[in-house]
Image (cartoon, rainbow, N blue to C red; front, side, top):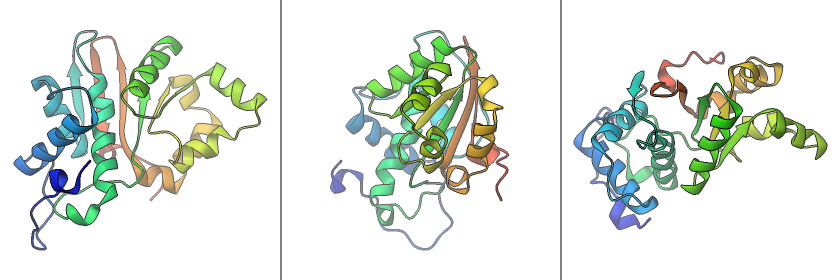
Length: 205
């Protein structure tokens, strides 16, 4: 992304803007145009994305194949782009240098479908399931440390059973992971509930 296309006007030391503002909308839509194959966001996508970036709880009721993957990809992409040159966007708040999201799904199949869709959009996604865990064990990969570092995965899709495991408790107690947690999403079918990190009760102070 070019500096010229993403640079915002210089501002004074005022309080940071909300994403749900003309400035925030402009930045989000520029990122979408430059990093995705979409010309623009749909009305049902833009508002939830702005709320997620602002850390607000969000309920989305949507049909299958209605483009809800944008809600998982765009908040990550926006923060990645701004993190490349944060001094150019002093007015925006809540930007995490290693932004990561959690998508809690009821089935392994759904987790893998979402992860595959996100990877096609250029977001590093992981389906955290028995197969993934078994593969990591065979290859002697410390999956818990990889996730906690926020260096290897942007979005992790996980089921409730594994979310309550000792490894995930360790992940959620990681200061680095909590500092970069951008959103948590719980969903199934047509109803998805998302919360920005400010609404997520992370155990680390």
